[in-house]
Image 1 (cartoon, rainbow, N blue to C red):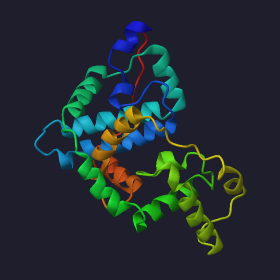
Image 2: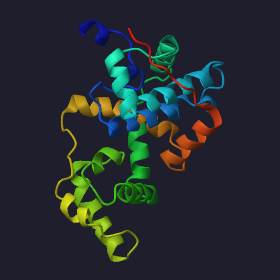
Image 3: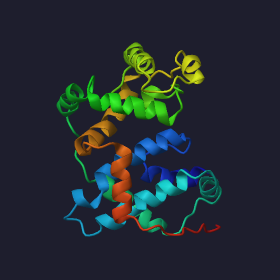
Length: 224
């Protein structure tokens, strides 16, 4: 096990830990896809293939059965190609300053775009707010009362459904870590996401990119 952890893995490609939740894997994949799509890397002739590898890695790790098989074998077809994609994105973008974050934060927080993200999260999770802060970018622990006030208003106006789980989960929202080191790591990832974020939502954008560049490929596992 020690030897395998030191080697390249699909988890490293998607910039997550092996114990990452599905939400964490999805969030990291969205960020990477925004950075690596070929339209933003036209000078790289291999950009299309590298974007495909990111998508393929996500398809494996987001599927419980495929992820279990990968965890058990530690192998997947085209491993060298996955590694090349990883090395590409690790050297692609320079570190972005906190000033860039602050500018986007002013634009995003309290905006219509933020409200759309809140409603999208609420509808997608049928009112379960437990992982709210983890899925709304630039959110803070102190935003919880503001978000709840917004949801109450939307329910009162009958713009969203008043799910029973909303009332029980509103007091169980998982708070973000206050550790400065953990916050810095998250902000480093966030800056890349902000720089490339389009006006439409993440889901729409990623879907468009996958339809344009990603050709589904049957991936076979290979026993050691």
